[in-house]
Image (cartoon, rainbow, N blue to C red; front, side):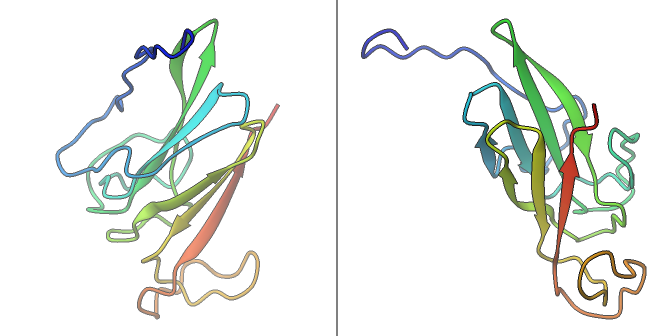
Length: 140
């Protein structure tokens, strides 16, 4: 922005774009404007680790993409997935980003585990849509 004039400075897309992924449904920006998290709640990858290989094997599992701006240029920094990604989880249904961009909280409104509290058993998918929140932190 220069005075009251605004100009587009970036156009962001995923590197594994797919139909109906809904990339950008939710977007959060760090307070310094150099980190951005964008949800893709209908992304179909079954990876269960950050930066895993997308495969379209878990329809609607969801993903979140983290971008960083350095020297005015944006680049993808991470492809975040739930540790128990399953079809229909909607990982990325809501997202929050810390002011410095080093921590992101990601909601999965349709995640189905019967886990309780913090760090429970994520493998017991005996409930219908109780949801979950996943927290990712940047590792130095």
